[in-house]
Image (cartoon, rainbow, N blue to C red; front, top):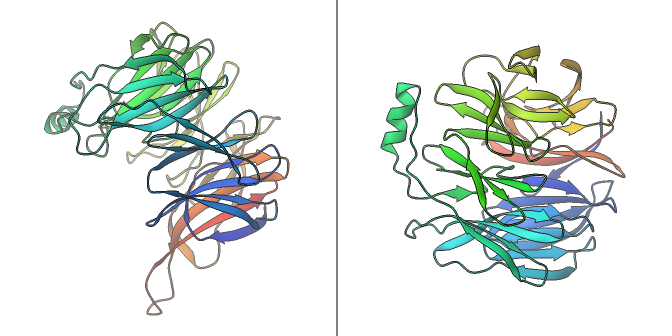
Length: 378
């Protein structure tokens, strides 16, 4: 249930909770990006203007908030104090677009600066002192696409000249001593590829199947789940640490892993109805309740196995593959598509965000945009 709620002045793009209880929201307006801190009652504590080149937010094991930008990352304390700054190594024609915090170090992923000549994308691992442990350039092979004839035609119309990393959450995904970096041709064809690298040496281990990669998740012992959606494809492939295709399922979405058990909150842009699902070791898919709508938050898994996620303005509580209950997150007079970031939990409860359109009574004014932050008792 909703314990507290407030409207936000800016559109939320990500959310996190610090060990000390503060709720961090990375938000956007046409004026640029901001880092906002709220207390348990959703009162604003402080805000920092991050400018137009901000590229994300991460929280390290010490409770510092790292605000990523196109040249490096800045760390802020729970009181909003700038603690330190890490400059990413400069690569001509490229800019930082994603960050993975790895055992106190920083792995920066680079994409092409808009308008620059194409070149191989890069990943660099840097220590807190700025020393480069390794630097890797990735090949930019021409994307080929097999399967649906329409997909081949679309892929042929869009030449690959700009790779963008960091387009989706999960673009950098760690599993043990391996890192999966997904680069996608966005916002054109949406076709992408995942590169699996050693976090120790930066050496490329393997490249995933090309296609419209939508979601990824870390398995055990350096393995990964890679979900493909679009151009008639709707599937998940399991890759071993060595890059072998271990299994394949006709399902994809947000993955929830508990040991060897894999549940999926399906995301499907086809006309079929998505469901809650379980991926079995024999390649079959066990389906559960139907899901309404499409726009979905990243889920939160409670210690007892209950699963929570927001979808189209509703909080869904899931037991196994069954929706136990739904609670509305919608404020009054708000309609249209609801967009969510993720559900996070901390010492003061769970929190979620939403963005939507406010539809006024007929003839009373224009459609407005509304964003909000809610505290949940779950």
